[in-house]
Length: 115
Image 1 (spheres, rainbow, N blue to C red):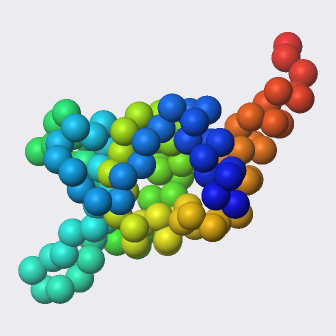
Image 2: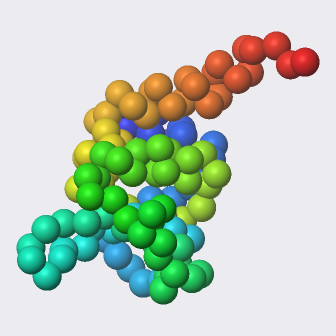
């Protein structure tokens, strides 16, 4: 399934890093721990990282970020995504989800009639 991951990333011109390497990312999908030891999952726009909207950018379950993460991949860019979030969203290295995304974005859309 890693070949589908590579195909999707190449076609969307997306780079995903699992180790935080600075502030050059377009978007970060990060795990942060609260003072009482719970995890929260945050989407940070790196160009405006201080502007986190609680009703839109903070999640309490990692799998809840799946649609946001897939939308970001489809648009392309450079992202930091915590490994825990990739696992929860079923976008880890061996996931069948990559094949599904490839077929949905690049195979089905080419075969559907254009009106």
